Image 1 (tube, rainbow, N blue to C red):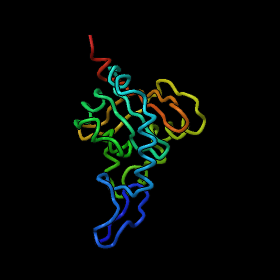
Image 2 (tube, helix red, strand yellow):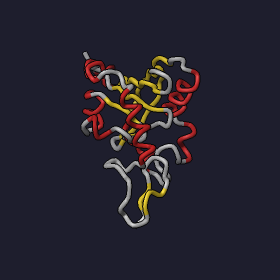
Image 3 (cartoon, rainbow, N blue to C red):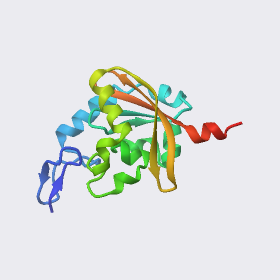
Image 4 (cartoon, helix red, strand yellow):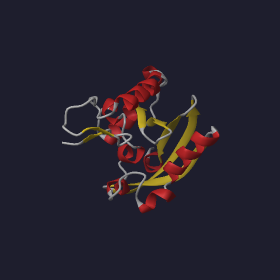
Length: 167
């Protein structure tokens, strides 16, 4: 059986017995992920925020999520690590052939473009209006994206509809 690294897609083994970690990463990608996780803002800082937030690497993969985001995603924060942002957010288009970042609509995705822009320029973007498509329909949100360190970005999500409905 052929085994590939889930990040770089390099063939790790053809017999199913190889140097693949529990996350399905080759040794180089596992080491890279470890270095990124070591630079994550403290878990207490992530947990202290009541707004949903993600820490995303330059390859658009989730490095960390706080409890508020995990509640929206319906999964524990640790389980979201390594997911592409669209998959973690629950974007319906991420389920199309090709997946997150490879569908025809992804080039126009505001979240993906802003993460790439902030990653490249290292300049924060505040309260950018956008939407995500979820199984329950279109959901209006605002995102604030700020750089963290050399190649990470923090994405803070504000649910516009929930704020409008709040007394």
